[in-house]
Amino acid sequence: MGPRREWPEPAALAAGIGRRDRSSVAAALNLLDDRRPEARRRASELCSLLVHGDITAHHMVGLTGPPGSGKSSLSAALLRTWRVSGRTVGVLAVDPSSHRTGGALLGDRIRMLQASHDDGVFIRSLASRGELGGLSAEVWPMSIVMLAAFDVVLVETVGIGQSEIDVSQLADSTCYVVQPASGDTIQFLKSGIMEVPHVFAVNKADLGAVAERTTRELKSAIPRMPDGDWALPVVLVSAATGRGIQELAAHFDAHHAFLSAQGTLAAQRRVHQAMWIMKRLAEEFGSFGIERLGGTRSLTEQLTRTGASPFALHEELRQLLISAYSKPV
Image 1 (spheres, rainbow, N blue to C red):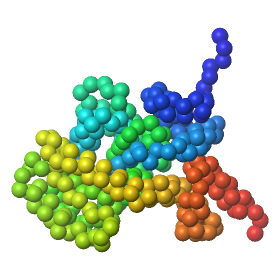
Image 2 (cartoon, rainbow, N blue to C red):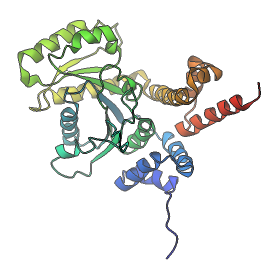
Image 3 (spheres, rainbow, N blue to C red):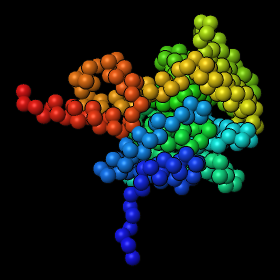
């Protein structure tokens, strides 16, 4: 019996992902979640192969909002709508972490909403692992894999409230889900959360007058945008009845078309990758480390000029800082 082959080959994985092979997608996500040095090396090579493909026709949608707003039910409703239109969908569902195991606590919540197995849908649950922004560190590189394989990628965050802004630095289009009569409308104005989403969804339209009132309040709170800018829509929806779901999906499509027409989609994704790299560096080396590399603005400009693997870029900068700190003063 020959030796057990433990590590998947990045080139074979990339080819399988391009064919939308589910087993290749699953193996790639497992590789990205593995923190052993050899896995990191192969993950970097895989991302290098994937980032050079043209996936601007594919769309990544982020869904965020406070606990209890119905994000999971809304995710399932959107998923059904996209599948009816013939699009394949990948879902990255970020759940609270178990303090005991470190794994996701609610990993099967969308699976339970799926009536039957569908080869056009791929769902991966991730633990937030204590990230205050609502996303775990693995989400950005995993999103590269998912975007290469599926027409739409939906990222649903853990739902920790108004500090949950990381999704806006990940997704092409971000939707903030509002729960009627929760007091969130006033808090939006106080916290600056209005700057995060591209679409607002007021869920639970079946509550009637209170949902209608929340929708009106939000619409009146949104400032008028200059001509040529994206105007923030507010959609009243019900995941339970299906009301407004197609309209919400249409707004996502319109925002993707807007980014494409402006020619900013690819550039926006490079900025998001730069933000991911800088956050990882700041976690290890602090703000002083970012300043040592030239500061946030300069480093962002440097990182957005390249289409290299996020792992490769991160490790290159990390080694620069390690070398700088190890030199005698």
